[in-house]
Amino acid sequence: MENMAEAAVKELRSTVSSGKTKSYEWRISQLKAILKIVTHHENEIIEALRSDLDKPEHEAFIHEIFSVVSSCKLALKELRRWMKPQKVKTGMLTFPSSGEIVPEPLGVVLVISTWNYPFLIAVDPVIGAIAAGNAVVLKPSEVAPATSALLSKLLGEYLDTSAVKVIEGAVPETTELLAQKWDKIMYTGNGRVARIVLAAAVKHLTPVILELGGKCPVVVDANINLKVTARRIISGKWGCNSGQTCISPDYILTTKEHAPKVVDALTAELEKFYGKDPLGSKDLSRIINIHHFDRLEKLMDDEKVSGKIVHGGQRDKTNLKIAPTILLDVEEDSLIMNEEIFGPLLPIVTVNKIEDSFGAINAKGKPLAAYLFTNDKTLKEEFVRSVSAGAIAINETALHFMEVGLPFGGVGESGMGSYHGKFSFDAFSHQKAVLRRGFVGEVSARYPPYAPWKLQLLKALVKGNIIEILRALLGW
Image (tube, rainbow, N blue to C red; front, side, top):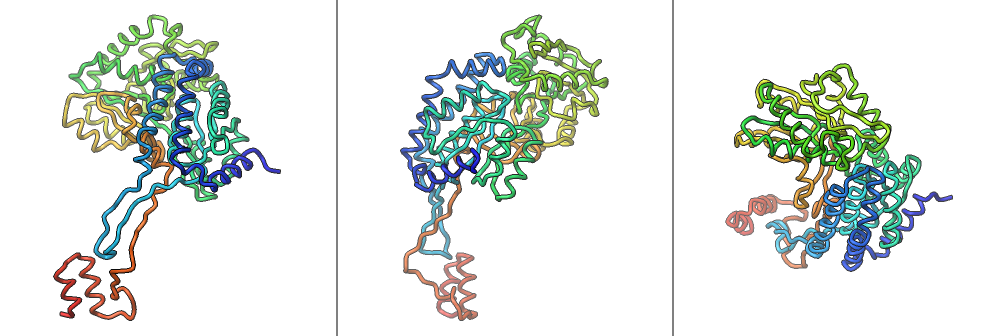
């Protein structure tokens, strides 16, 4: 007997075989439907995010709703151009000929999303998959149940369910989905589950996009505007889901002399943003669940760092809230420096010279993002050149995610593949090479029986040297 996953894939493959999803009109209709979902159900989306994460409306709108609307509007505006075959120049060996690259849908794709941005991370890849002409199964995160249920309801009501399906559930349902043959899988989450996804994909040689995370460093130089720097670090850390964000600053690197000034600046701005009682602030998301709360407590209570807290540290287990917490001079072998924090804790590591921070970053796994605050042009250039990361932002944190013209993706342990805007369309497309020729322009030198003059002519053609081509043809 077929399970739900098998039945869904079977139906979607039938839809793809019919050619329905390839048409421009179908793609546009589905993108417009997604836009309608967001515009007509904004309040429901905000309420679901509040239920799952106690996410402030401000963050829910900017980070999730606005981002989906922007992505959808861009696809609607540019889709015809994205779908258009790209002409390429052809060489002397195939003359006369023409070449083009034709974007082709992959077929049936699986999107497994995560809980920290449960609406955005679910819908944004679906926009790219639909724009590219694919059928899609979306598996929302069961850790954000309110948003998962809402996605299932709204996508089922507004989209073509013969081509776009939502399958809710936890590990058993995900396991069933991963047992199926897909034309591409996109997974957003942690490295442990990513390895399970990749192992399942290998059985069918299925290509995979993995959006993971890592320890995103922030290098803070001296002689900068510390107030602006502090505000931007806070925005990217605590203003992004209380640090439960894959590109949130994970730790700060600065010099020993400058560290106290960084702490003072962060402390002053944190109090302005969240007040003297941050646990009571309505502008901070809560920790997603008790499991993650306990994990963060363990990091804070590690004997190597528990005495290093210089700001914050308050916690409310009943309401799953942890105050913005800064730790100074944490040891490299502590728990907090050896796993992605994914929460409201921010360690500060000191170095003798700011340039030493680059080596410290490269000694760890490649992060999803790396940040530098400086006015030094040489330092900026060296940072971009020497630090390997999914993305780099200078004098900013996390904001690169909002730019649809930039690819979003990791490298090494922080992931593989990228998406956003046109990059999403490309991620779910096969770039098919097409060469066109007529029946004139035959070159007998390509065919047996081979002879020295034929090889001479082919070498001349490869070089593109007209004189040598003529000499070969004339037998000189």
